[in-house]
Length: 96
Image 1: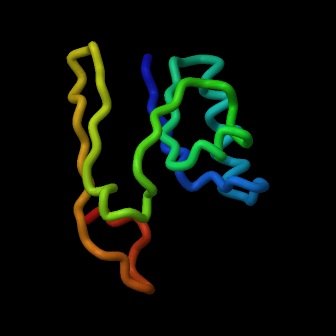
Image 2: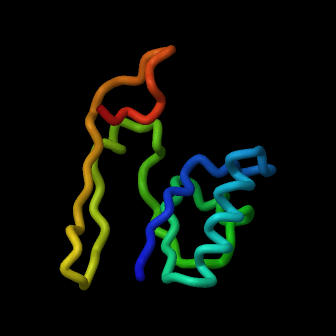
């Protein structure tokens, strides 16, 4: 099974709660499945397990609205998120 985990909120200098959780989740999952991480800054690799990764835009960038992952399976290979500006107090996921 191929699993893609978004690790773009991983810090670059030291772990905070979400960084540590994400790193631990990736490490544990990679023991039982084929895992690829999504990162937005190569400095994040210092705090993440040694698994394959794809370097894409920041999760806060307007370029985050859509991206494509290459696949050799019959699983859909394109995902997109709604493009709307972040507003203070709005839901942080951006999903409707």
